[in-house]
Image 1 (tube, helix red, strand yellow):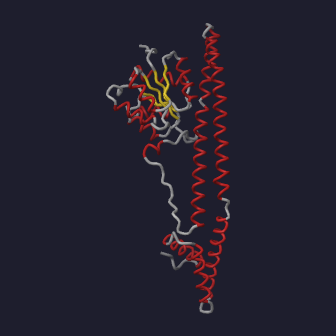
Image 2 (tube, rainbow over the protein chains, first blue to last red):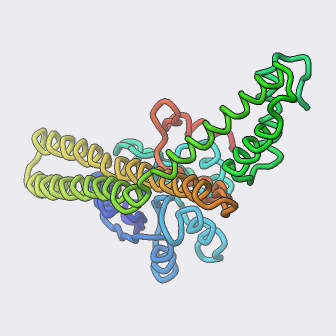
Image 3 (cartoon, rainbow over the protein chains, first blue to last red):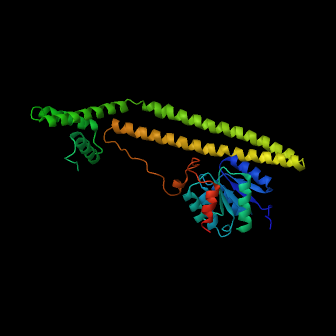
Length: 128
Length: 212
C-alpha cells in the first residue's frame, strides 16, 4: 500500500524559513501540492475553504497557537478527521501529552530530518 | 519562635528573620532610626550581653542602610533606557542576520534542486541527498531564533525585577507586586530545551505509543 502523494498539504509556521524548509523537504519526498499559512487563524480559514489531506503545523505561534488550531480542527464537523502533525521545538512530556489529548496524529520535535518527516507522514496517512 | 537556648548571634538572626517575615513591608531606614533611638535611651541600663546584642542590631541597621544606598545609587535609567535595549537589539540583529544568510543558502539550494531535475542516475541522487542535508541543517535558524527569544525575555524579566527592587528601596511602601508564573497553555510554551534536558524524537515516539 502506498501513500497518495497528490493530496494537498497545508504547512503552518510563523517562521518563513521553516515554511520554506518544510516545503522543500516535502517536494523532495514527492509531495508537490503544498500551501502555506503563517499562523493558526490563517490556517483555519484555508482549511475551511480548501480541500486538504494533511496539516503540518508548528505549535508556538500568535495569535492562535498550533494547539488551538488543532482543537479547532477537531471541533469542526468537516475537519475533525484531518491528519494533523505537530512539528515543534517544544519537547517536554506535558507538551506531547497535551497535544495527544487534543487529538494530534503525530508529533515531530525540531530539529528534524527528512527521513523523520517522511516516516511520520507515512504513518499518519497509511495507518491513521 | 526563636530558640532561647541558641547562641546569642544565632538567636538574634532567628529573631530578626521572624520580625522581617512579620513586617515585610516596613522601611529598613525607619527600623534603623528606631534602633538607634532605643539604644541612645538605654545606655547605662544594660548588661554586657545585652550591650553586645544591641551592638549587633545596630551593625545590622548600618548594613541595611548601606545596602539601601547602594541600590538607590544604581543607574536605573541606564539599565532600562540603554543597557537592556542594547542587548536585546543586538540579539534581534543576530536573528535577522542568520535569517538573511539562511534564505540565501536556501535560494542556492533551490537552484541546485532545479539543476538536479535535469540530471539522472547517481549524480541526481547525490545532488538531492546533499540538498536534503542542507535543508535539514538550515532549520538551525528557527531553533537559534527561539533560543535567542528566550534570552531576550529573560533579560526583560531581569529588568522588571531590578525596577521593583529599586522602587521598593526608593519609595517605602510602594507596590512590589511580583509577576506570577504562566498558566494554562502559556506554561507549555517554553521553546527548545537544552540538549541535556530535552526529549529526543525516540522518547516522544515512545510517549505517543504509550497512549495507544
